[in-house]
Image (cartoon, rainbow, N blue to C red; front, top):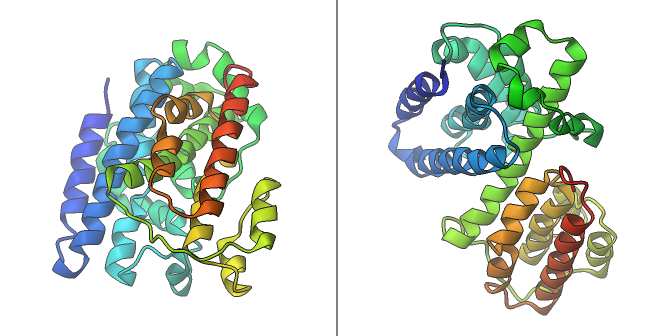
Length: 289
């Protein structure tokens, strides 16, 4: 039985309740992002050969991943998660879990409670959790092709369920980053361009494959819009699923983003990242990069 259509209608009704004029642009932005994440997620899971029951479950997780953003827009008038700290939420994933627990998940999936825990875990963890690649090896089994998702979450061991939950969390994370790229290509988001030079400190961190901590860079006075370009390029370091890496390559996403650049340091960083993506795909094990 398909649950996504029922859950989607409930989700859309929830989103439509945020009708204040002063946040309409934020709500529409996040509604479009949700739609695109579901669309890109379907492409990804079809490459992974999920059966219909796990496709249905994953679509619900993808749809809900940013459900907290709508309440965040109403309360803070921004999508800056730092503003949530005054309300005792670390990030929008925690807020989304709160929204779902407050009754929305019961309305979305009224027939069973077997999906509640996994959906809540995915929404809560998609912002910050770093998934152990070993968890993703479950994709090489036939479990997600042959098992029924509803039965699986009812009867599987805690360890097996966690592997599946982590795998779908990784899908959400990868596709979330993929849509940021699509937003830029489609013109839904136009990052600021500048002639600002990027500090050698930041460049060295980037080329060494280190995590670029935005808050730390701002505090140290190293942040500018071109550093933001490097941060988006480091998404390639965080993507784990070969299927998503292949979409980026097949759609020539990095090449299209590169054409929008006019800063030499940024263009060189794009060339480096394009080469890096090709190597990751070539050296992948057929599942993860």
